[in-house]
Image 1 (tube, rainbow, N blue to C red):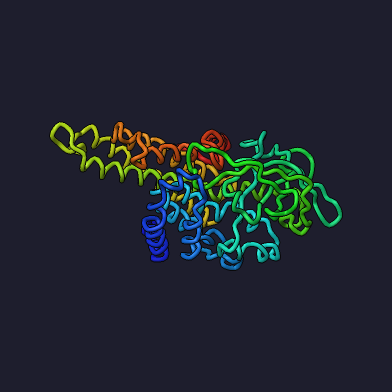
Image 2: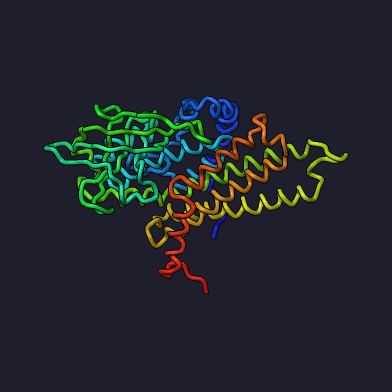
Amino acid sequence: MDFELSEEHRLIKDTARRIAREVVAPRAKEVDETGEYPHDYFEAFKQAGLLGMAIPESMGGTGNGILPLCLAIEEVAKYECGAGLMLVLSGLPTRPIMFGGTPEQQQKWLPALCSGDRKAAFCLTEPDHGSDAAALETRATRDGDDYILNGNKVYISGGTVADYLTVFARTGGPGAKGISAFVVDAHAAGVRVDRTDDKMGVRSVPTAHFSFSDVRVPAENLLGGVEGQGFNHAMFTLNSLRPTVGARGVGLAEGAAGYAMEWARERKAFGNSVIDFEAIQFMFADMAIQIEAARNLVYKAAWLVDQGKFMKEYAHNLSIAKAYATEMANRVAFDALQVLGAQGYMKDHPLERHYRDARQLTIVEGTSQVQRVVISRAMIDRALVYG
C-alpha cells in the first residue's frame, strides 16, 4: 500500500495549483457576482492539457486517470468551486461516449472534447425526475435514418456553452431498460435553452434548462448503435465520477480552513491572536481531522475507479467517499466562517462564498440520501461486511 504520489501526479497537482493561484483566485469573487462562465479558466485548463484526463489516449484523451483529475480539482476548488466543476465536466458528458460509444463514435467526438476545442454537457435530470433517473420521460422515436427527440432537461451544468449534449432519452418501455443515450448537436433545430438558474452558489458555471422540440438526431448518434443501453452508461459515468465531486469538497474545505487560519493568526482579541485561544485551536483540529479523512476516502475511491472497479459491487466505496467529503465540506465551511464571526458573514471575505458553494455538493450527482441507499444496500447484500 503506497500513499506517495507519482512524479506524474505531482506534476499535475503543481500545474493545477499554479493555475488556481494565477488564474482562478484573482477572479473568484467576480465570477460569483456576475454569474458569467469564466472562459479564461477553461482556456487555462485547455492549454495545460487538463481536460482529457478521464479519457484513454486511444480515444483522444491523455489517459492520466480519475485520481489525477481529482488532484487538479482539489487544487482549483480551494479558491472557486465552479472551477472544480469545470474539470468534472471534462468527464461527465464524455465518459458515456467512452463507455458506450462505438470506436467510430469515440473517434468522432472525444478528441475534440478532450483537447478543449469543443465543449459538452450531460443531460439526464428532468423537471419531474431527478434522483429517479430510470423514470425519465424525454423520448426519442425512430423515424427512418433519424430519431425525433422531444422533452425537457433541467439543471444542466455548462449547458449554455456546450457544442454537444449527451442526452438520455426513452426509446422503449418503462424503466431503465427503455433508456438510450445520444450525442446531440447543441445548436440543432429544435434545441432551445429556455432559461438559466439564479443559483445560491457555484454561480460561475450556469445551469441551463433545455427543451427539445422535434429535434432530428441522426441514428448514427445513438451511442453504441443499440437501444436500451443508456441507463447503464449514465450509472457507470456517475459511479466513476463520484470521487471528483468529493474532490471538490476536499478542495473547498482546504481553501476555507486555510483562509480562516491565516485570519486567526493576524486577528487580535483580548490582547492575543485569535489562534491562541484553545477553543479556536480545537475547531481547526476538527477541520484537519475531517479534511484528511475525506482526502483519503476520495483518493482511494479514485484509485478504485482507475483500477476499473466502479461497477455495482464497488459502488458503495464511491458513495462513501462522495457523501463524506461533500458533507465534510459543509461542516468545515460552517466552522471556518464561524472563526471570523461577523466578518465571515460578509462578502469582503471568501468564506460566505465557500459556505454557499458547499451546499451544492451534497445534492449534485446523487444526493447524500441516494449515496446512503447505495451504502446500506451493499451492507444488506453483504458486499460490505464488518465482522
